[in-house]
Image (cartoon, rainbow, N blue to C red; front, top):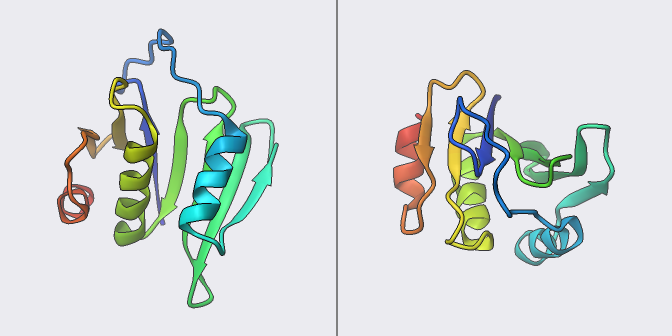
Length: 126
């Protein structure tokens, strides 16, 4: 599985000037509303304040976490589930904040704008 990130910062420049802070409790509730079978852990590690796993057919189609800066999301999984998650996250975060979606290698990078479709995201991540 490949690792991707969703961040308010355009890579590779990591400025820290943003008011965006994701509330882990609220984010967890939204995940549970959309995916009732999600397994969520708080304070998962020194790097993640929230970690989740979404299962389907005894597999892990997506795993992800809210990093300890309360701004950046890490996700791993197949393209279809990554796209679904990216759309959820874009809808959750106010449109006043830019969001950038990128692969851990920075091979894939694009702005996650409102209005992108699942098929467009799948196409961009390959």
